[in-house]
Image (tube, rainbow, N blue to C red; front, side, top):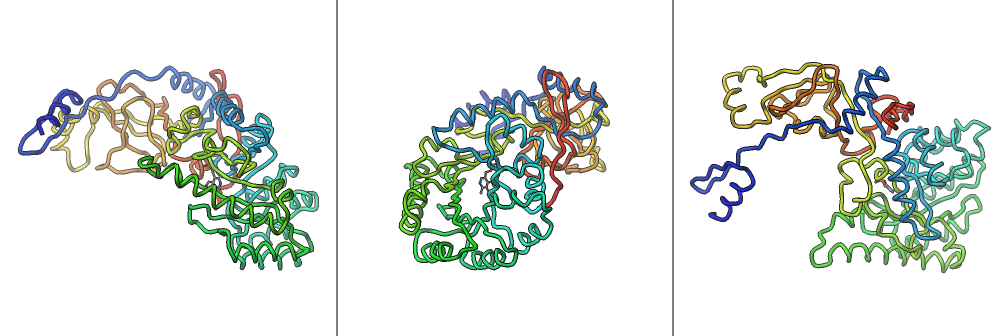
Length: 426
Ligand SMILES: Cc1ncc(COP(=O)(O)O)c(C=O)c1O
């Protein structure tokens, strides 16, 4: 206990200890605003933006793309995860800079939009699409996009789904490319090497309306495993062994050379940096790490920088924090917690995001979250006025990036363009 209380004094500057209970007085986290965000704020105001907006810093995005492509070993392809970068213009920019013509697509609307705008791209479904949605895709497919449909890899996770896609192929009179989902330890479905995989591969080979396009094995559980006692290392090698066993089984059926040239997809942002050879996978997919929301603040992704921010105007700024119906306690609360001194109400809110600038802002648990005018509290040095901006880092890009209309593209201190986002559909 003595040791603990000494640590509390060092960390907090003031500590109360007694009867085994130790409470550290919070320190004031407010302070001067970062020059980076003040410049971004000026750019938004100059552009006449006055509503909640998703801003992408194109210079940082480019640096992230370069970090990723430089990591890829010879022969390793890069597949752009569309759901985490949900704008055709954003994806087009990433394609141009990375040289990738591979996309990972996750729903019908995305598939249709990307087929229309990027008919030359190879699209791998990142989750198995219910066959009725796939049928819809063919029913609505404009004749001009017919070739795009031939470049889709339909993900199949069970023998039943394979049978459904085989029937669909016959109905639409097309040969469909199927990619077989592997369970390499995530246990989110898919095949493992064994009898069911063997029967599925045999069924694909025997079906003239299907082509075997390859495998997809995703392993984001690996970095979540503890490093201690080699758990993480073992998880990674177990994933690779599971993948390897499926490749060997496919090689028996289709021949080793054919299988090695097929799509062998693996990884996501949290794991792509584990891949330093093409022994198992010959392409990695990643999306989030190019904009780096907070969930991707990991050891492996240290070379990536945050590149996407929510910016929203302050509507009201108050010198004091006052709680409705609990005003009698406000003084005590402010005296105890210096980060509770000041209050602002912002335009919108309740996003999956953390405030980052001005420094020291936090949500008020008692007041609660609001999608209309969210309350944020800050310390004595909080300095932001109505019509100035608060900046947040999203926790994830998927879904969150769809909540603000067109993305504002920021570069060299100015908003230089707008990128429309996909429709908000699952
Ligand atoms: C199959 C698959 N591959 C890769 C990814 C990686 O996406 P990100 O790089 O955005 O994490 C995902 C994300 O959910 C996925 O479902």
